Length: 80
Image (cartoon, rainbow, N blue to C red; front, side):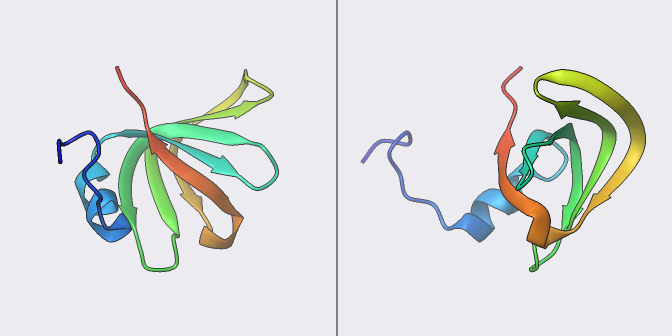
């Protein structure tokens, strides 16, 4: 099995992306992009250098943002 198809535990994946750029999509469709500072077992997320996007348009910039886990639809890494 090559690394592209290797199964990974979600907890292990989340540990590897702390400190990296991510996109957090909320249930209402809003996207937050920033550096993942930390997260907990409830998927509560802390981001640094955060940008808020609605319908693909930049709406706000925040230094730090805290997102409650029950609002999170998904979290993904950003390739740069």
